Image 1 (spheres, rainbow over the protein chains, first blue to last red):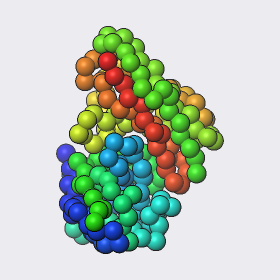
Image 2: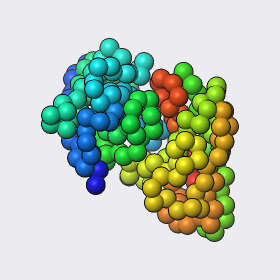
Image 3: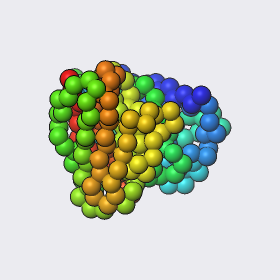
Length: 120
Length: 106
C-alpha cells in the first residue's frame, strides 16, 4: 500500500523559513517522480514543484521559484521542500504527491497534507 | 502557461441523477488530462487519467471524455459520497495546471 506522510508544517513569520518532508512507502521510491501541490484555505489546487526519480532536474511554479527548493533522498525514501522568504500568500496545506511515473504527469497518490501558516 | 477553466463553478443535482462537469484548456493538451475528487477535509483522489481511463477501483458510473481542449467528467446515478469538489489537471506542459474546481452539491 502506497503511503505518503508529510511533516514539518507550522506557523512561521513572513520572511522566515520552513522545511517540509514527506516519508514514502509502499513503492520503489527512486522509480517515480514526486511533486508538491498546495491549497490555500478555501481555494483550489496549485502545483508547486516536481522532481524526477533521478533528481537531475527540478521544476517550480513561478510563484515559488528562487524561494523554494525541492529535493529527495532515495536512500531514505524521503521528499523534501525547503521554503524560504515565506509570504502570507504561501499559507496553505502542502500535499506530497506521487507522480504516475515521470514529470509532468498525473498524481496517483496523495498524502494527507501539512499546514503552513505564514503570519506575524 | 496553459489555463484550465472548469464549468460550472457549482452544480446542484439530486442523488440518482447524472452530473456533467466540463473542463476547457486554453490550448491543446491532447489527452493529458486528469480528474480528481476532493471531499471536505481530505486530500484529492485521482479519478480519471488520460482523459478517459478510470483509476483502479473507480466505479463505472464515473466516465471521462474529450481530447484537445474540451473535456467532460460524467457521474451517473449520483450517490451521497459523490458530493465533493472536482478538479481537472493538464500534464502536457510545465507548469502542470489545475482548473479552479467544480463543487457538486445537493
